[in-house]
Length: 68
Image (tube, rainbow, N blue to C red; front, side, top):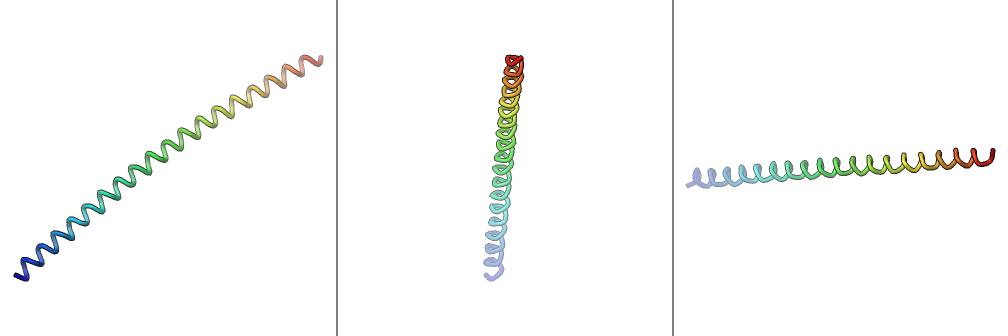
């Protein structure tokens, strides 16, 4: 009887280990997606900043031409 209870306890604990590993893998996958989305957002923001700087430089150049 003791052996049977020991086997049941061992099986239950092994099952918990699998669940913990699965949860950790899912959490890591979610974090990876968040990181990728953050990188895409940063790239889009950088493109907008570059475009705005380009427009400012064009305006500065055209106003310098107007004053001549």
